[in-house]
Length: 387
Image (cartoon, rainbow, N blue to C red):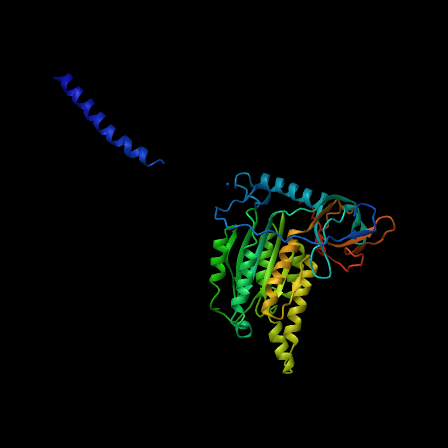
């Protein structure tokens, strides 16, 4: 009797396990050196536009943000991070340089020997030199305030179309974010290489909600966020250039933008309105001040400022920005001043003929001299002492 009872219990257990097993399993389940002249080529092919691709955002190792140290090893991780940061800033200073002709197009094929960098007027020895179309990370900032909507509402569709065309130049290994600002700064699309997400973000810019336009806050918040990203990066801002209610001041904005090392490319959108108001004898102080601020931000960070008077000029401004970003010289040097004083050091980039130490002469295919512009950041902040 006991044996029969035991056998019945074993059979019942096996039956229950047989049903439980599949349910549990079911729950388990990417010129030449020394030459005094650089001949500009006859043609330069435009940067090809890649087809739209939709794939997950993938932050690669060299471009990712620093990891947050765990609480258990926070002190050890902080010390290691400080060593790495100081070593990178003290031993090598990286400077991205654009050399543009009188029409705003980049001049390629200038050898390393023709570049000279001065740090606080002291010549430095270049240790790194390259001109490659490196991947880039771009933040597209758009002012979306109804304070100035009446000025450019008729051309707003064309402005968004030009901005959308700029997002379509994105390549598979590039990343872009779309950010709008009025009283507050809002990230409409975080850094991605998905063309559809960027287009959807711009499509949301239909009816502005606030009259304020806090440009300084938007710029500094974005620059601070991007300062931790390695590689080629830039801020492109579509703006009136007028700030109304930012918590941060203009002087503080200049300082923070310089220290971030992120170049600012600005497109002023009130030129037609300014011309109309000037013809009526109106007050031009706000317009002039805004334009001057945009020029200053661009010059001091190594970017450019554009002020198209007509909507038809907008795509050309975006095209020049794309060409400048795609065709930059990447220079690096070990500074002679190794002091860890945290001070701002002024940089000057020159093109010279090393044989005569005179300014380099650039000519077109017919031998006529070309006026060129060197675009580079104004300086950098030296590392601070390790505590």
